[in-house]
Length: 382
Figure 1 (cartoon, helix red, strand yellow):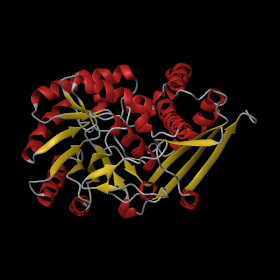
Figure 2 (cartoon, rainbow, N blue to C red; figure 1 turned 90 degrees about the horizontal axis):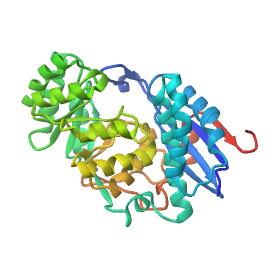
Figure 3 (cartoon, helix red, strand yellow; figure 1 turned 180 degrees about the vertical axis):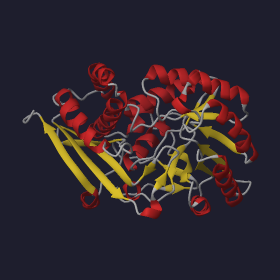
Figure 4 (tube, helix red, strand yellow; figure 1 turned 90 degrees about the vertical axis):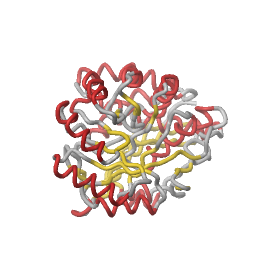
């Protein structure tokens, strides 16, 4: 069986002025999901490629997938997603290095790889979790609420608690005074029993991070994500030696060699591959497997649409090193409305779909409502 078609659909759900998501480095003004389809032998697998930033990412992704990846992918034999992943990275990463843009290459491959695993499971009547881990492992993975702050802190903490989530991650990196207010409001709303994490989105230099850790400690923050600009491992290790707060990172790490460096570092307590960015299920599984050998926890980064979350759940089902799944508590129709059977949260844990492949179907009428760009490449028109 060989790949017959690659399809790419970009979905966009604009946010109102009060719903805009602020990060330490910029704002997210619409929710996006790049859906990748791979077809073979009458079956279609689906995946997701991360396109949150920059504003022109959807157009770049269409170009990379349909003009760059499709000419290699269409016609490939589909028996082993890992083999296709290896061949595509072998041919495309040198181009990415010359381009100076490895991120878009990895992000494009992520969507293709997810779709190939979904297709592989559908063709063989097995879930992705089962393909990765024998019997498919656990049926639920613990979740924490994210997307809290810098605005609507109390409201979003309340929403997380009402959903039964045992922990909340709040955004910081907006200046010491505002960060103190965010953390104070979050801790006051959550009380002492619920757990609090923080994400700086690479906002600080080393000296600033050391100073801010004192504030985080006072609010019982259990781990700190991406504290340092450039995410430099040497500086993270220096910071780790200076604070009692465990450090987490990984959403902007690319390549298994780099992931292994972070996983093996004593400074990194949680590694956070984003399966829609880092290379898909193949890379996520490799990171989770290595992290398990090293005793490092895994908490996949998920800040896109529903497909990436489900892919992360299947990796979490197969590998016990996965301790958390991220669940954004802000409104996002590309997470909540696009599946025929919505994600299910049971006692603070996300249920792993157990059908063939990823075990999900997209709702066509909803997809058409949010559709922005569509393009296909097949053997006939290449």
